[in-house]
Image 1 (cartoon, rainbow, N blue to C red):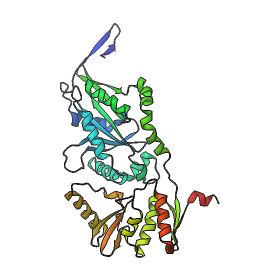
Image 2: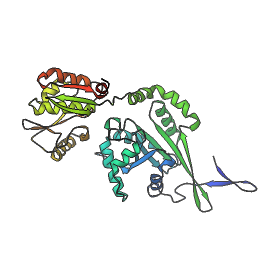
Image 3: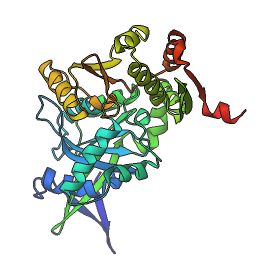
Length: 356
């Protein structure tokens, strides 16, 4: 729909133009400006990377990568073409590729971004303040990936695909940025066309069945802290993953093999990363990353306890214990308690203890 200027005597039509005719470049102009004013198209969003492409065997890069207030990643794909091309397919690939990003990795990426911009802020502190978190919480980070497509226009094929993806629970938005020429000035009309503001409630209702389970998982996440005792030593206010790591590390240090623990907790095939030889953190990470590359896999090592004081050394081998735990955490803890009675393992929720 055209834009008009209201004058004293008439409505004067502002002529539509194209970004190429206006000599507006995609990266150095549009992307640069939007990066600094992302709230115009995506409120409550923090940009953490530009031209992000840290993955193996791919030269493709995300135009802008951000996080929102719900700790979800946001992939921004920008085109100045007149139909958007196949940007939705490209953005879906990007969303899949970053979906496993951890909070620690995001901090690393954001830190590099700030350095390139000549800013000296503490990246982790900036992210925690933005999210209003008191501390790092990988379990709540990147539970979803949102997609924002930005283009001068969108083809019917693209909008149909976007609507269909929204119906199936993928949060994908289309923002139209249309340029107009007015006596040497370039004016930009910015409009979200998918989902339409007036239709958003309807579209949410259509897809609510697909999204409900995800929302409930976030709302019902167990953030209870635990006090844990083993061999007479007690650690207080531990998150679930820290609690089981405390127990496993103590057992291994006492002579229990990681293989024995893996046999007990047999539903987690990747319970340990293991390397022959005794390594410190830096060399251990290098070895497992190189091994993953040789096998054509990407090892997301922040998902394991790989610190120098966290690695487990046992009979000439080095092990890192997995950080990610779901609904069977308590079952794993009880198995360890029952199978190693001499360790005198006990654990209880802090809130239960405080309520006694």
